[in-house]
Length: 308
Length: 308
Image (cartoon, rainbow over all chains, first blue to last red; front, side):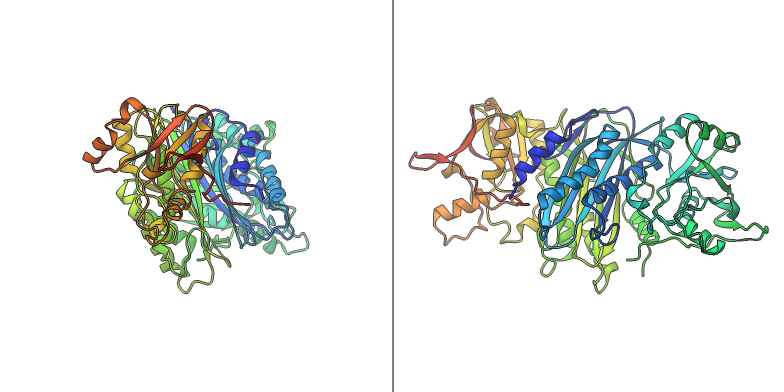
């Protein structure tokens, strides 16, 4: 039996305290230095049997995904991560809960090390039910301000940062790399008007961005990149529906000032990033899709919404 | 069935966005204004069957406790709350999950309204297991800097903010008011060297504060205030063990500069706060208790530690 005190001491040794964090694990709360920039806070809770399945997912990948989906939110805000807060409800019936937590924190350490962010706090409890992990991250804008969902303007060009669909059937939702490097490049190199990450599918998430911006959008079916994780034996319509509706892609959806958009894909490619123009922001409301034959129809909400 | 979009829209209407929060619910993350003060972050996860029991606890009290324990952490840091982030794993088998969440958020609203803090983000998922609630709060110091556990110095006088013990047998752990008003008063009126909240019992928590400060302590058994929730028919020794070991009191443990300590209880009482001097910080290590007969013994670790 390892006590809470021992566990906290071990985490303090394993995770260094780096600026802007001044006080990390071990007090009643963490302390971040004063900042002339805004502070951005994101949070997501991941549940065994919902967001991963520990029967065929390692504790390391579960911990990794819990951090990665939150980093994807920070990327979507145009922000660099600064500190992580990890709360865990650990099942009591694990054969070796100490090893389990060690492995889970390996998945977290992969990103805290890569992005020089501090594991600055958290809470660990055990119970007789499945694993639940909540991650809360703080971040700071790459540029002068965060990029919101609400900034899209009619005429902006819509891009996605990678091919879509099939993430949950493959292991991509567990192993993806959050688009932080692209987010940093975009903030430095283009007039990004609006950004969000694709977690619930392009059809759902694009509708959210357009609603927040008070705009509509049209996308070209032929331009939506379909991921190779989507079954090649399916009809094109079914493959397109998967790309638009599957969710958990964790690619960025970006609205760019049209003045910047023309050469953006090429310039991004030179920097090592793929950007796919898929459509355009319109005045009005609602999202539409243009088929290759020119026929336009509503981009039905094929994405996944958590129902209560 | 209420969709996630509807639910988020309703929360946005119910919880106003107040400074320093600039962007609250509805984007990928929340945005807090730049600050010349430090930002403090606290987090705690509460689980049905561990921290409350929904068979005899309302959703409102569960939500209330989830915020209150985190506010208690901010009080312990000498900080005012600014924003709340609430993640909830909702059981799928509830007869009416919509009403359940409404009631849970009533418990949260009690404190967001009282302290003018913004519910600025969160995450809600459903699963086939008991309720889990994670709360993460940001705060800002009442004074120029947060009060840490590590600042106690030999000679400091130790105070507790109220009587101890029996919290879990009564409903006090669900209905307590976090000591934020006292914390603000202390920051303005005395040289507070070290502070923490008593969640795991005085014997455990005092040992943590002294370890963090590199000091020891001695407390007077006769001065430890025993809560009336502790059964009066028990022997004094058993009642004292409850006061020192029960946990979930959520009172403050405070180390005060001895120059300020003499009149502190009286001055606090004039301001409407109870402060009980219980002992003194010593050089060296370890915590001891002085019995009324003058006999000194180790303050055994009678508090509750989460075992893994």
